[in-house]
Amino acid sequence: MGKKFKILIIDDEEVILDSCTLILGSGNYQLATANNGKLGLELVGEFQPDLVFVDLKMPGIPGLEVLEKIRDRDPNIVTIVITGYATVSSAVEAMKNGAYDFLPKPFGPDEFRLITQRGLDRRRLVLETISLRREKEMLRENFAAIVSHELKSPLGAVQQNLFVLEDELSDKLSEEQKSKIERMKVKINDLINLIHTWLRVISVDVKKLQENFKPASIATVISKAIENVQPQAKRKDIQLVSSVQEPLSLVSGDEGTLVEVIGNILGNGIKFSRVGSRITIKAEEKENSLFISITDTGIGISKEDLPYIFEDFYTGNTGPVVEKSSGLGLAISKRIIEAHNGSISVESELGKGSTFTIRLPVQ
Image (cartoon, rainbow, N blue to C red; front, side, top):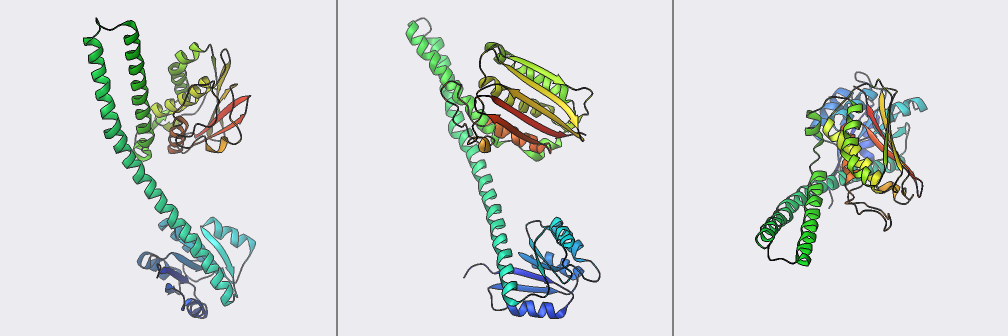
């Protein structure tokens, strides 16, 4: 027999509590009832229900406040409103306070069983999502350990021995042999850099990052990011044009990681742009937010790839003419921006370029 879901019914009418208990009594549930909001909230803590039915009109603590307190205590509990005063406005208000569904009185047994089943189906999905998140975090932690100890350390040892070997044999190697060793060094260095990138995407700790937030200037962030990628742009004769609408309010954030985000997007723009083209960086303040847009005229992103470009390891079909990518830069950038309570989005058309837009709340 599967898990018995816990259902709590909060209503000030004894007839409703009795009829609901009777309707669900033969099912595979654990039931609890409360005839007021105060007792209901106490049972939420003690009984730890999966599904809660809440009457909107009750003496004492009203139903909407009960919904709000349940949501604050555990947003994963599924709540359904039952009321004899159903209106569109009350339904909307209940949904804003976390209610999953709405059941007007009077209701029949079949209707009540159906909405109960829908609520428990929702709860199953919520629990499965939580479980998958935990599994993902465990995989992430295990992957970090494997990458660090099983890959990084041996590669570091190979790299060090290669340096020593090259030095010891420097006067005995032919030019062809020196060239082969140089290629080996480059490949090993590429692998080590890729491992560092993997570890970087795994180690973005949002809470730890937020502990170091300070007032930061976006103009300074953009300036430093441009400086970091300038050598890369010069090699392709790409012009970086900055337009910052001063004065801009400060943001609360970590300057170093914000520089990393802008640098990642600029780096991608340079990588996927044609020689001699231009990339424009704009920053402006609107409605208590700073908007940073980075526009290139490169190869663009296909409609098929757009929904996935911020996912780990996604590289898309960029064709044979561009440099290869780890597919992690944008994933890291998204995590960093979300840690700053911001958002990042992209608009692109294949063959015409892309515009990335970052929104950050002002301090």
